[in-house]
Image (tube, rainbow, N blue to C red; front, side, top):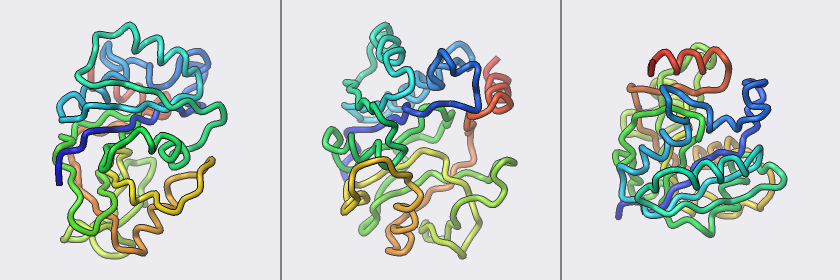
Length: 222
């Protein structure tokens, strides 16, 4: 498989649990250690062979555009997928799919993760590989099990949590109608088909979704 040439960063969320911080600042622009969450995600992509990044926008999206315009350029082009109506995760990726090449990385714009992205790969027959992390305190039951062969399933192997980082083939979204829709039902479909792979990551991972997790992330980067 050739190295992925494109990626999508999800940045359209409302960040409601972080209000009032996110009332006037989109969550991906909140800073940790003097650098925005979004910039940190783009820094990770800059370590890969990606040449194009798509960022979806909804809540305070104009601020994200202006912020990126003012930054030093990254070694890839950046385009935007604007969502007048929020499309959720799968719907947002579907709208941006024509701008992406297969396979492509997906990163959450509000997650800190130091997984080397080039360790993700799609073996024959797989349509996605998800970076999986040990279950955080706020999600003790996890999402899926990871077996010794690297396949995600419902019963075999340790149960882990999806990190928000993954590598996807366009075929993962085949037959899905556009519009607002979450990603979880597509994961379930891939589990049933046996085409969903996983890779365990035990390094840095902070899902910045609440004041408490933001404080914990900032404590890592004083």
